[in-house]
Length: 367
Image (cartoon, rainbow, N blue to C red; front, side):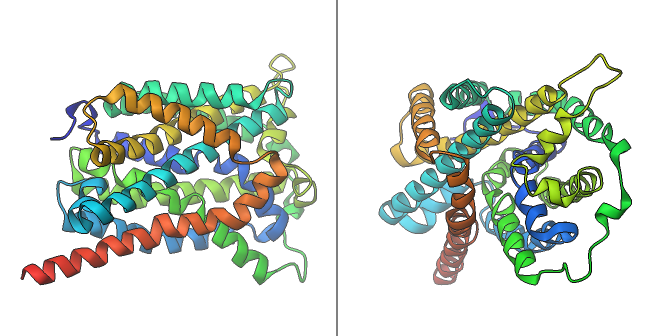
């Protein structure tokens, strides 16, 4: 029996949650590496990653379509049986908690590096995860309504902050230099963008059975991916035209750096505080969805009837993971380049392919 407190997201709420989930820390974490490696060609990797994501989204949606009314946890157990399904479910739980902890650690690193360098990272990690758990305990309908209210403000503040630096625009900064096209760099950054954020979309797919109009919701998955790509390319051009690739390559968080330079009417200083609030909010949404996905699998695997103990377990486990993820930003960047793509391929492609293959085998054997 499904928990009705989580049911009935509207298609619009699902789209907003999916878009915020995908954007998450992408604008803040990925920009430096992307523009530093591919220069004025930085718009190409997000576009190629989006095209690759279309096939993966179809794979996930096709799996759900073959098992209507079931979530991914139910599909896993029904197709793979109790023993093997238990192991695969634990793998899903591990990946969901890992991604949530990395997203939490990213926001902690950004804020402690840019704004509050004397505050321990663990404080932000614990606060972020605690609020995410609390939001999750109130149900996804509450989250849907919250995101529906907050998204217009997030949109206006974020894009308004970026557009305020448009006075520094120089068209020559976005014109590629002769011989600057590097196919290897573009390929590497395409893989990086494909693995993060697009291959981390699987927890969002788990919300589809909880929506009121599943057919329309499936279409909104593609739309959310397209809007994320378009927004990413827009941020790339704004940063290139106002800051330039040379300076961006020397900045860890260029989006935050651009906000720090804004002074509005000489009265409103430090707009990076508002941008930091946007970062925290989008990461909260992402972490809440990831922990919801982990919670659903834990509920099916352990068959534990009480919700609160599982949420408390998720709180401490994710906090511990976030603090043990890496020691500093340099290790974080190296981790993102080496291990995150491998984890993302396993979670986003190999496991769904396994389930889809078993689905065809089971249906073929039954017929």
